[in-house]
Length: 104
Image (cartoon, rainbow, N blue to C red; front, side, top):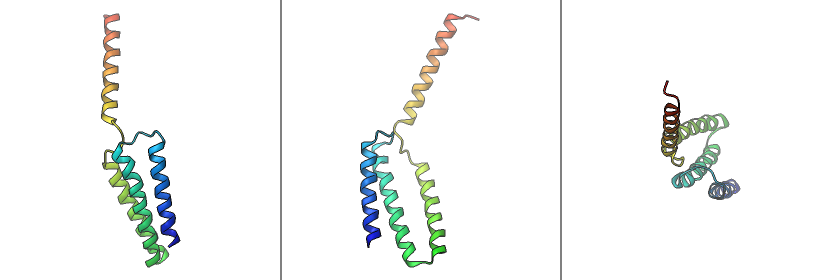
């Protein structure tokens, strides 16, 4: 039971950390990252209690692999497309000013 309490406290600490530290996560990402980590930790504790050590190790490796694939496909970072458009506009402006200064 103490492991589940520790997982809950770690979830609250990670949630607080995600909202107080200025990282470039979207609002969904700031809720989703701690929730996924809490879910993985709870499932890891449960798997460890019902299976042998090497079964739980394999199950956790599979669970973390699936979680990494899921997190890679979700748009959790703030405005990555807007940043790319801003960089493209800046490069375009710089190219146009260089073209006007040097006609060759």
